[in-house]
View (cartoon, rainbow, N blue to C red):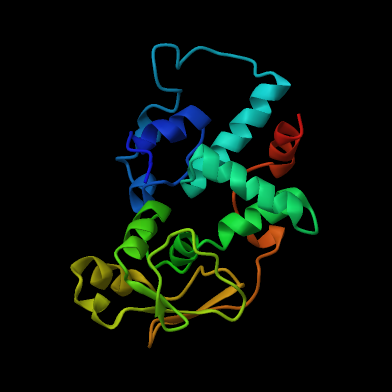
Length: 208
């Protein structure tokens, strides 16, 4: 499976803002963006005025990088969003937000989406009692997500659970910290999706 293996800090610098791709490290003094907030590369510190197309492209790239989606997969998500009833941009965000890896991240069961994707691939989670190791699996309202019984033996999982107090979890999800069982209450509305993107620019880009 193709995946990005370069420096994720460069992605934040390229977009000109923190995308929180490394979890807690992005909040610490070690964050590369704090030390070098300009773009990477030889011309990173140059000032450029973006064209209309450039603004649209940057929004698309930013959204891809936030969720860790490669280009071809992102295009498929957009096609699905277009076919669904409703507003295309909001549909796109809802499809990305209801990926299993993102849900694990939103439940604070991983420090970053990248870490959540790794935990899902390693089979740490069950959806409605069935093992699911596909990060892009789409959860639905009513789905129940649980930790594998032996997962608590992992030092990584132990640390995550100790730090998780069940706070700052979106309203469309709920988590029982006694049994570590989560439930998807609903599909999130646009107001409940806190990603710093203007999705209408992405729709305009694909409408060209």
